[in-house]
Image (cartoon, rainbow, N blue to C red; front, side, top):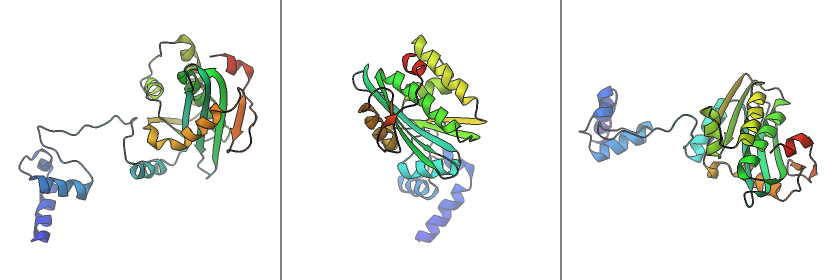
Length: 224
């Protein structure tokens, strides 16, 4: 009986009308959703789809998706302990050749947005040294990522000026993809950010080793 029920459900699934079929009972609908991994919905209740730049998958699904992209990937984060106050940032960069770099930056007196943008600029410059063709940027700053994806402007002219530097740097790559994830999927960058907040301005910790003097040109430190 169970096998026959599955057969009938699969036959139903092969017809596009199943997506609009109100006749499916709750247990049938649950089985179909579990079997296909897709939401089966009625005409009166359609699933909510996030835009492509917003990733809302589980950790396992997210990791599968990210690894399937096969691109140089930057996970970035930045924060200010007071907004503005002592700030720091952290990046994890995965290169296609298997190399992985971790950076913690001490940025001194900055706001959250200033630290995020300055950090993204430095991360892109670091990634560029390996000359990757394609780059995937992932972070949990929805404001910054949405601004970049939608090609909008921020209210602060100084932030827009620094954001323009980020966009100019991104032109060095053949392909750029930017995605927003929730903080729970960005734990490594968050951990490195907390290390960065403990560093003095202009200091950098590479691969969680002892801090060394950062190669942050003075003009970049005072721009924001």
